Image (cartoon, rainbow, N blue to C red; front, top):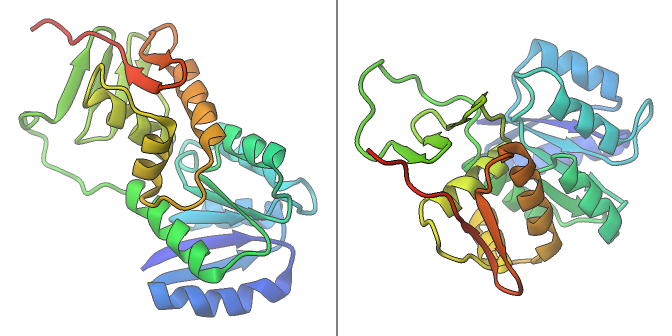
Length: 238
């Protein structure tokens, strides 16, 4: 069973939402303040956060920013923003700050469950430990200046380990597995979300921009105008 933490000042939401999500093997805990959420995160393990945009103490956008910049143990926790602030600008800001998905209120509980299941499938917060032994064939992708260790879900550049969110890692792996192949924005959204509903192509541009900054100075991602993106690094010579 996956454990979720809801951060929302609407106390009436937690009870019925907890009962509904239990049908999908999702256990929901809830707090109403960011400070309480940080205390729970310090003491317990959660597989994903459901974050409201309008909160006391600080808004959800600032909380998400601090989460991604703070304790290393929390940086990769998937975050789904669930908020009444559903216009395009707020969605862009939320995704740019590191949210993995964004669902505006009012919402359908079944869609929330589906989106949570999607981000939990593509994010591995606790990979199973493997014995220390030579990497199996095809467990690494090696390029000039960049190495992707698929067994450990790690990315290394010339400066060492590159810290990526789960979604950023999945995007990089998707492109790097087929260097030179052009993926459209819709291709990327459909592959990462596992569904075709509510395509939001601007979200892909933001995600690529974030990933490109983290990979600098490497020119790993190439933009093809009106077409999409491809991985552009040459393979490392053996």
